[in-house]
Every structure is written in C-alpha cells, then in structure tokens.
Image (cartoon, rainbow, N blue to C red; front, side):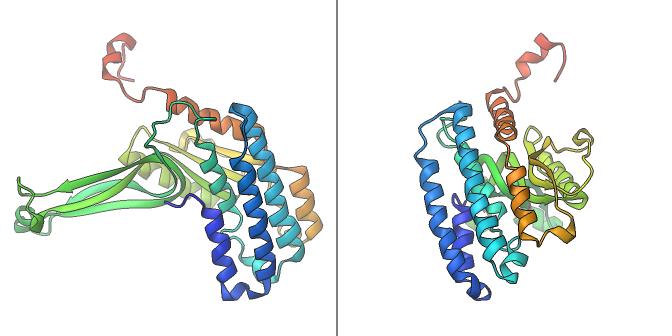
Length: 295
C-alpha cells in the first residue's frame, strides 16, 4: 500500500532517463509537492471546512504542476506522457488518502486500511483431478488494482488436512475493499464501461461494497449509473474535456483550470457518501422482521 502515490510517481519521473530534459522542472515540482504535503498535514480545521481548505490547496498545487510547469515549460515528452507517468491523477489519489482521518470521517476503526490497493474480486477452487482435490486443490484468486480504497487485509489458510500440514496447505492474503474509487483525469465511454465491469466483479466478492469514479474532465455523454454496479461518478471540475485541437495550447489549458477548478462542493458530496456508508449498518438479519422484508 502506497500512502504517497504522487510523491512516488514524481521521484520515479525524476529518475526516468526519458524525462532527462524535464529533470529541473520535475525537481521544482517535487519542492512544491513537499510544501503542499506540509500544508495539508498542518491543517487544524475539521469537517466540511477542512475539505474546503484541502480542495483549495489541491487546486493550487495542480495548477502549479499541470499549468505553470508542464503546460508552460514542459518538453513534448512530458506533455505527452504525463498520463502514462501518472503525474496528474496520482495527485488526487494521494489527496483522497488525506480525507480518511477522524477530522473528516467519523466512526473509522483504528485498523482500517486505505490508499491504492490490489483489491479482492473472487476466490475459487480449481482441482486439476480427483486426486488433486484430495491432495491440494488449486486456489484461483482474482484481484484488481484500485486507485483508492477503504478496507482491510484478510489472511486465509486452506488445506485438505485438518491439521493443516504445511505440505498441502495454502496460505495467502487478500485485500477486501468495501469502498473503491477509480480516479480519471479524462473519462470516456470506454472507461465508463470498464468501470462498470470492475464494479460488478468487485461486488461479486463483496456485495455490500461501494464503487465510485472521480473524474476531472468528461469526454462522453453522462450515463445512468443505476443501470450498472457503479454507485456514482463524481465530476470534480463540472467540465468537459478540451477539444483535441486545443489541448496543446497553453492558454486554453490555463483558462480551463481557472474557469473550472476542482469543486469543494463535489468533494464534500463524495465525503458525505463515504460517511453515510461508514455510519450505516451493512447487514443485520435481526431487522428483517421489523422492516417486513429482507432488505
């Protein structure tokens, strides 16, 4: 689990020989990152006020990195590959980790885990033969990387031997994400369909889980998420993606950042959904008779 994904991506880019021409720029970005991180960790506010202040700091840092540095001074390589290097969406990935604190979310257990994780999707048994069933049936674990999660590591042990003889026992670990988020700078129809598929597979392994997409720029017609297993798609900037012919023009990029900053209202809505989920009872069979229904 990486709790500083953006820091890690910046350091990797600085060491990347293909980004040699942009090394001074990236080193300047790293200094600004440290300042941003320091400001985030020194906030004393709570609740919505803290989310608003955090979002303001997020906009300041993203504007500096993505507009003042990359769009204005970056080489063609860094402008073209910033998505592959994850220099942009990793900022929000790291920002989300800072939301998981007692000053914003109430009722979090002390041992809860967060950040980007390889999340559990399904576990099945696949014995190769009837003898394999008796000796040591193969376990097939399906997992998928998620940009942001709230959940817990689960440790398991399976064996056909009641005394768990090490020779025929399989041990392992999985991460059970009860809340997962896909972070996208640009979001098109293909990405939406991929998210819908991921949401379905994650909910096969944990039906009560929540799955969201957090998007900066929309590049598709909005869809009805009720027709999928996605719980919601949050449009952080309430903006569409720039047309292709404008994406490399500095003034267009600058103006879009200025006119459509990441909205603290949208971020607060996302926080509220997380809080409502954390505060709710996920399953209580004793309440079925009171309700008059199973769910």
